[in-house]
Length: 142
Figure 1: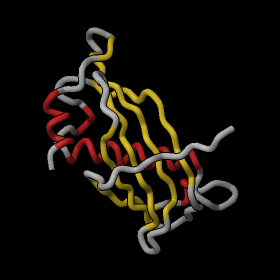
Figure 2: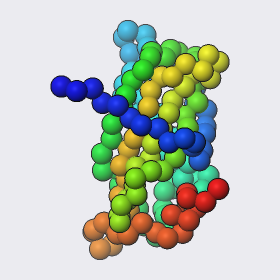
Figure 3: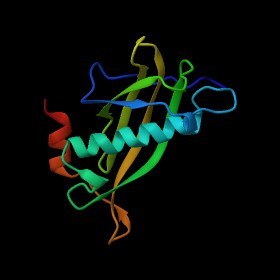
């Protein structure tokens, strides 16, 4: 089976730092893969709040995670601080990818990269809806 490779954008719209706590490591004493996803989910929440959408309510639409892919590049350990950079890419009519790079703060070591496909969702109508124009404007302008 071919390995997953994630292409990164030339720059990222947002960056945040998150520490690795003891509950993030597994029995092999490194960052657990499911914990990485939890840390990235926190970074996603911070990104949405940063662009004006706390709680991930985007112009009255919800955000649904449709799919995801992670490329692990190195181990990370308890007490290290991760820098998670995020940006949007590959827009469709109803969504886009949140693309991220995870690095260890002190060394700059690449830990992981990945992307999460999101779909904007109208919970009242129970169906996907178009990417809100204001969201698009906020993430595609400098």
